[in-house]
Image 1 (tube, helix red, strand yellow):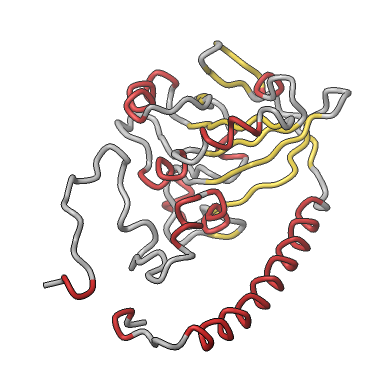
Image 2 (cartoon, rainbow, N blue to C red):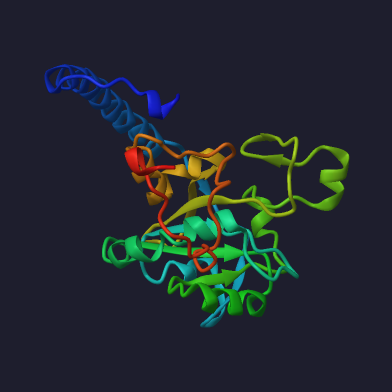
Length: 245
């Protein structure tokens, strides 16, 4: 779409087009509600593997990560062993965690991040980014592999590595994702949901804003315009419209 040659109409014509789109938006909202119901109706898998993590409070089990709440949401943050910085895309998403967390923890939900790197390796990066959410390490366990966000080098070499419920043509040793767990009153833990790739879009509030704008996301490849929030160049605002050169 050439935005500079966009159709310009009268207010009455605009309202007619807007009302037509509103009908489609409402239908989409209702379909999204039905999809959410189907998501909640998925069967669960009991977790019997004794997963352990290293965090700010020391060694913790998966049950400990719930912090007394019934629901645990884990964002699988791409930060592999030996990395100096986290994945830029995961960092973009992580910028949207602290805000919701102010409310989720009061609604029986614990939201945190897990990475495969040893705990000490991402502390400097965490401090630099200024994040407050809990971030723990699964280093030395099979957790990332079991939940589809890590691939072993031999699987990548053999072309058998999987991601997003299928064989991946271009997998990495670490990949992004989100997993949800439920803990009942008996202390049993269940895996209820995981999503990957474009399924994570819903978590990125900046994208939800951009999708409302005339230029949309304005990217040739996903997230090709963004960087770490402390690295955006200080550039003067570019002129628009009649003031543009």
